[in-house]
Image 1 (cartoon, helix red, strand yellow):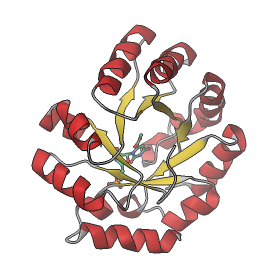
Image 2 (cartoon, protein in one colour):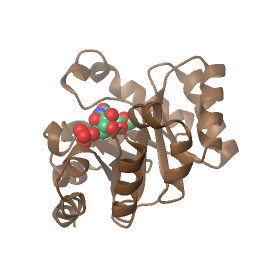
Image 3 (cartoon, protein in one colour):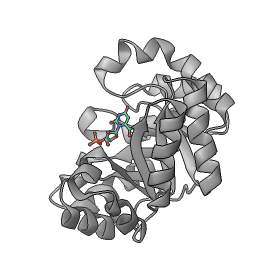
Length: 213
Ligand code: O7M
């Protein structure tokens, strides 16, 4: 995994042109561009390959299906040019292992979501997060997704996943602090609107980079 700037851009915009413009403007400031449903549904799967020609792409489809369907989804998005995929851990060991196998076949990275950053995640995911992190590590994922909105949860996940990467969303608009998330043990921050909705996206990315250096 690339860990230079420790910034992953969440490119949740709905226009192909805007996405390509932002990716080009920010490519030297981020390690990966995370592309998910909003952009893929708006612009089509080809956008993954187009962005991948600018910067490495992590496809955030939060894959959560039976093993066979998970395999098909992973193959399709990895074939389209993604360097990594994100899957949900809660669907179980067999489903997550299918994603790990597909990623290995393609030479890609796989990250598992163990607990999400929004308040509702405390209802069901929070209480299961430690088990999910343990299972994800057992399945051989490259990393897990843990919430910057709850840095203490990042520290807990770190104690479970050891050297595996922790990528962490929820800074800025969702209220988390970039430096607190990294201090708690995150390897990289996933940042969207604080950058993409800024009048000066490059300057906003630079401000985050200054804070975490
Ligand atoms: O910085 P934001 O809030 O504009 O965007 C955060 C991005 O991270 C956005 O793409 C979310 O879908 C994603 N995300 C979360 O905000 N919380 C989570 O718990 C998990 C993710 C995510 O990326 O999961 C892989």
